[in-house]
Length: 292
Image 1 (cartoon, rainbow, N blue to C red):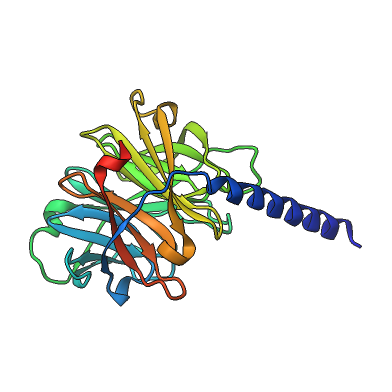
Image 2: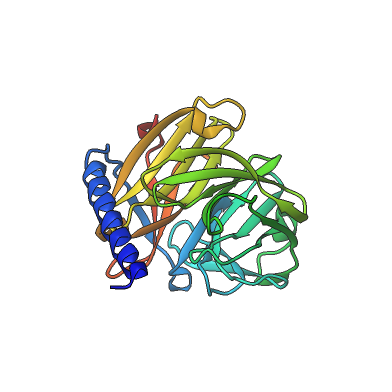
């Protein structure tokens, strides 16, 4: 047998063993019961980011989807407005976040570790609110790459938040997440490394509540549990140095592939999942108190 083939088989066996051990460990996590709010429109079957703004939820589709930001009715999940970003391409849109004045759409996915540069599209909330019809808009573009490291591939990320001063990105490594920051202004940058956390799961979405000073990450581990991490009692923006709580949201047959999380104006936690098998794209809610 070719040596490279032996190495590949050995790595596959090792990865399978790691996954088995971690899946057993996930069964011990405290369970957070979610309530189904509504099924989402078929036009967002790959919902990959979520924010609450102007009494509506807003989402995007994953890689290969249209370069469109969708407004979603909170009661029935229907698309009520589409905003096309004319100077954007959906290579792998994975996240949206917002601060007081802007919405940021993150074209940062890189599952094959091939992209040297990623993009974030920035649009003003004031421009979005000019009318409620389908529209075409131009965005500012934030371009960035990750710093050189000893990794043989580029980082892949699907989670991002804005704290009003910088953007925070959280990578989707198999058993850990690396935290980077980049500026909010249009331009070209190298991301700044901040910290690392052993997650034992893959991070796919993030939401920051600046009022209560808490950060939520969501994700999953293979075909095992869908996961939620809560961070509190951190200093400045070193989120991983604070108190960390980890929960299960159920398995893939219940909540499918969880890709996005957000807070509404009342600080209630919501998350969404992509369509998978018999599980449709869905908006879920959590009772805020159970995350204390």
